Structures are given as C-alpha cells and as structure tokens.
Image (cartoon, rainbow, N blue to C red; front, side, top):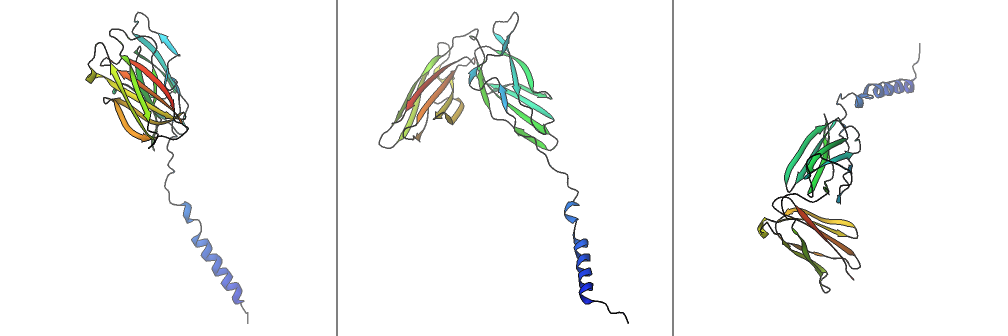
Length: 231
C-alpha cells in the first residue's frame, strides 16, 4: 500500500490556493489616467514691460508680442488666454509652445496657458506684463498716491490710495494691486474699483513692496511702487 505524506498534500493545496488567488490585481482593465503637467510660462516676463516684441508696420498703436512656455508632459495641445481690464482678447488652441499676438501699446495684460489631453487639463499660474510704448488716443492716468502704514501697537497694516485721470472719472478707474512680503506675493488683486484693501497683520523686520496699476476706461495705465520695512 502506498502511503501519502499528509504534509505534502497540505503543501500542494496551499500552493494551488496561492496560484488561484494571485495575478488578479492587474486584470482590472482600467486605463491609466495621465493628466498633463502644469505649464510653466516663459515670455513675456512676469510683471515687466515686454522687451521681446515686433513693431507693427503702419500702426504706431500696436506691438506684436511673442508668448512662449515650456513643453508640458502628457499635453496634446494648449489653450492660450490673454485678458486686458477683465476682457478676454485672446483664446487660442495650439499644438506649439509659442504664439505671436498683436496687442495695444502701453497696456497691462494677464495671461494663462492650459495644457490639455484626452484625460483632462491643467492650468498655469496667471502672469502679467505691460506692452511697450505709450498708448495712443488718450491721457495716461496719474500714478496712484499710495498710503501704507503699520500700527506699532497692533502690527496691523493698512493700505489705501488715491487715483486720478484727465479723461476718466474716479468711478471709471480700476486698479491692479500686488503686495509682496519679503519678495513673496501675499496679495494679488485685479480690476478693483475700491481704493483700499482690508487691514492685515504685518511681520516685524519684514519688507513690504506695494505695486498699484491705475487703469482708465480705455485700458491705459500707470504704475506706483513703494517699499516699506516694518521695524
């Protein structure tokens, strides 16, 4: 009579269970989702007046601006959007990472790039720039008079300003406000009509930079910048 080792039987059964249960985790059939990465903007340089532009023949009021950004992983195409005073002036789908746009001189614009593919999209940060030259056809608004103070007792910072323009009423003016703390942006507001922001807590020994663009009804603007160190 043949004697079967019981331990061997148990071992074989255990191996069979492992084989029957294994390998199922990769058989779901679900495709891998690959969203595009967030685009990184290059030109125009953020917060500056464009140096990379082309003169538009027979039109002194316009400048051709080149937009560029880094190629984004998993992106099939890109959407370039440009706005000025809250109005969208460019909305262009592209497969390249560069595009030229003819814009008005002497105005501040904001732009983003959205990377897209069949799985979804990812939008860049919002950058701003100013087109070169003086605007044609109207007066540039006066630079805002900025009032910025910190209460030494409470460390609360207050910011207000006064705007003025020769051919726009005060109510027609809009403002873009950027507040930096030790060169880091802590507030960025666009197309505001009020002439103050809510008080905020200032940090001791920190330097604050306040930049305000005053924008008239025609989109022309002027800039004011002050620096303040809280000690």
